[in-house]
Length: 379
Image (cartoon, helix red, strand yellow):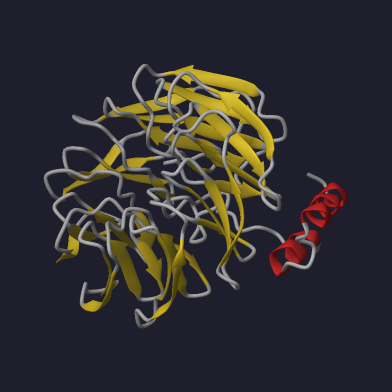
């Protein structure tokens, strides 16, 4: 949406005075992962899922790598290396150029949706035994491991010398990034499933307890807790002071962080299905998949639908954006490339197994895992 149309729309919705709306109107750039790195789940701490990389308009499969079990973990890419967790409990490192195995590290019995975070030469990931692991990025040597009381499906976040991760006992736990020393923990009333978004040293997450939480990462202080309107499994994406997330009450929510008020709620008039996919946000547009089989683009200011694309099964993969295109996996076994402006399908790859992981983008390559244990690299 161009700026003139944006201002017209928000004026009609009565949102023109909102600080987040003013920021977009003034043209402040959104966060995005650098062209050669995707160091954590959704690429950047605000979890907006956007890359500065230039991705070829015509894609092909550049390489595949076979794991013994499903890959639900989403990859991280740093310094030409792909890091990803597997269903048999391994964290592996592969060359981005050709998929050659560099090292493998045995974590627990299984790694689920927890995705690696890479910072300061260390790789962090959680497993379904409830352990947060830190290994050396160069060779996979274990640096430390820290136990939480229940399984981990959340992805780690790194802020300075602290790594934080959610657990299914309802806690968000923080450890020293260098040695795993416990720093603090914050308890909620249900699973911490989603990965917290981090903005200005504060972690934000909408929990399975139907509460939107804000926790200061330096000391674990709860800054506020407010209604998220419903049970939420998706991670929150934050752009210009507004948090966007889907819920199991079949809605997409925009929540203003400063006022802790819901700005809008989108719900399809006919198809009532939950949202598990986490949103990508770029240029005033929110893009996410739904269990109603649609990939949708919504106007960030008003929640109005901009376009939708109908797939053959639920979409639980979280879309990633680069080069004016949307990249997303489907449970129908297809990897889709959609035009960002119109939602038109530009290309698809038929894999034959559900793609529930989310794409990682760096150096013109896209990496995503499948339910049958294949890691795919497109470029």
